[in-house]
Amino acid sequence: MRQSPSMRNTRQADHPVDAQFTERWSPRAFNGEAMTEAEVMALLEAARWAPSSNNGQPWRFAIALRGDALWDALLDSMNPTNRSWAAHAGAIVAVASYQLAARAGSEAAKPNAMHAFDTGAAWAYLAMQASLSGWAAHGMGGFDKEQAARAIRLPAEHSLQMLAVIGRRGDAALLSDALREREAPNGRRPLTELAVRGSF
Image (cartoon, rainbow, N blue to C red; front, side):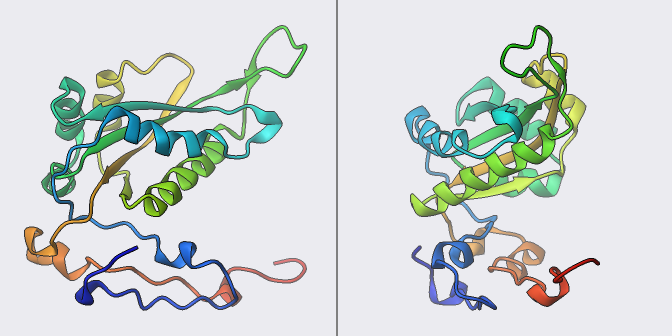
């Protein structure tokens, strides 16, 4: 991924991993370039192949492109800070999950305790594919869920998990002073704080 000198990636992995994992990050500065439906669908194709419990595939996506009525509605659901930078992206994807699942041969769907977890895996695949394709994706929770759910006409037995903002990286100078200071790949806790051999 190309980065300006001021945004050079200083992340260091504790163990050997492919560079795609440390190079992916979530910028807020976008350049306003429009995306086509085909370009967004290519990213969602990657999300489609995420793993899920019993292959339930609970993820659901509602796409809004620049100029769509849904674009304006989803922007309006965001808090003012998020709206200020998301307005320069190329697409907004509402990421939802279906709360039920039916096993093969089963007559009725039953509650799926893994629906949100599995949908998170699909979001990760989307974000990674965006980075590999020269786009950037930033997931957010800072929006009015009820308002956004109405905008996408979220069906019953579905949960709206987050909004994914996708676009081309832009100049950080477009951001507010407070956001500009944060416009860089962030770090991670040491793996020794997160993983133990044996019990916690």
